[in-house]
Length: 370
Image 1 (cartoon, rainbow, N blue to C red):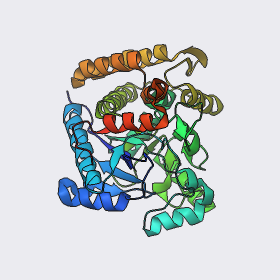
Image 2 (image 1 turned 45 degrees about the horizontal axis):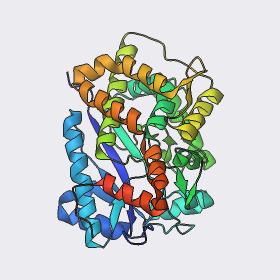
Image 3 (image 1 turned 30 degrees about the vertical axis):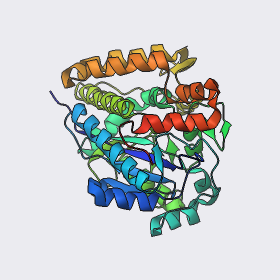
């Protein structure tokens, strides 16, 4: 059994290996990477500090992981031709220009005109996982079943503790910056495609959305491909961790699809408690406790994630991903998530430049630097 298809988009930051500052060369690096074999799988992002890499859909997570490593190596080679390195982190470690330099394009210019200072903190990088669910009604039912697990994905993937050269005290500061947007965070419970279309249409009418592509909920139907997109995770430090996320999300979707087919009702936590659970996950990451939804009790975060793995275990086994996920989860449990390891690099005495060096080494270890 292969389950639904899975693909992902990763956003990388470009840094100078000497100053460790982010550099606004995203369009140049994307162009070099595209001409060097990646084609339209490497593109600019909102700010010039970023490059996005996109996989094709895959039926197995193993194949997806191979492409993720290929894309990271290709973008890293293109960056090296510009004297730069890539890092995969939810936010820059050292300072950046505010507002950031925005990439060329009518849509980006319209975003700045519409959302104004909200774009000032959007040098934020995510790992967006797409699961192939072509039926709109079924995709929304899966979203309803999986909303309770968004905080677990945030806690696992948290990889943005620093902002403007300051430790924010959060494991995922990116989650907090995105929460300011008018259509972001956990999605509402969606009754049907008609309900979704009516709600999004009204949001466009109010000006809170430029168009359907601007829905930034943590889970959303893609506006341009037949997938359900999971947007909550930070950009992951390593290709292994991105592959872990893809395996988890694929198994979560398959498990939810089975629940829908069996007629099981989706949990409906109170929106205020779901939002609070996401905040707690962004603050604490893998440390401390998480809100166990829908019961709303506090439990150790590792216990919450163990419950997720138990729930999706049969799907992981069916997809051939159980060993991969258990091994990666064991390493994260022992060594911490991206935020934990960034702080550990800082504590080793090398300060914030050492954090950047750690991220460079993690992003594409097989690529040559400079």
